[in-house]
Length: 302
Image (cartoon, rainbow, N blue to C red; front, side):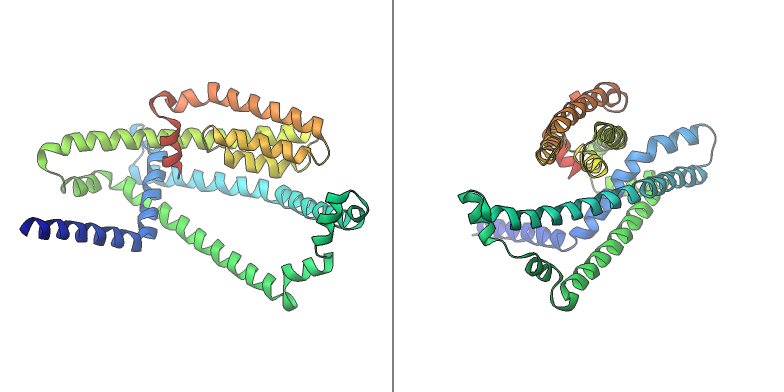
């Protein structure tokens, strides 16, 4: 009976802990992301401190440079990306109208599809809603999500600054929860994991930025439609090991089916070339990929 009561207590306690963690999952993710940011910038800060710069000044310099680079990057990419998005929207509207006009006179499959498509006016009304209510609601939700994401990013950066500034104190705090005989081993495991996670994030970010720049220029030179959008998507997919590059190539080929198929095939080979070049030239300088498998990297990224 006592054993049954003990098992019931353990199960109940475990469920309670899981429930509490689920309730505060937002705060936990913010804390985890702040640790990742701190691990990413720590080598830069450590190098400045070793050169005799005070820790507070090193923190200000590194985070100021990070903010400045992020701002310049957003400023450079926003306008070309909006232009590509506008062109894509216009071509989608023209293509949809072409389907409504031409496909009813085509083969049986085209006629069946065209017969089930709404008219342009009905489609526009479904998207916009009554007197633009759906569009207003969508814009409101987007604005709310945008400011919420911005606030979360600020919280992450502030927490990462505190973690970097008082790293030793925070480590002593959580290590105090571990038995004394295991603290040295736990500290070594923690610092080794933190170092390699930071190295992977730095390598992935640098490769992603270089890939976006090189792919954007290459797609534009090849004459591919929407080069900025495709380069932006490829740069994001670059963060996903192995699968990301395959998805990028498939998206490029899918876009090429709408017109410039030869250019899309050339862009696909160019994407693979950039991928392998960055893997061989940039990746080994920042991260020892042989020590980690792809699944672990995906989990770390998530």
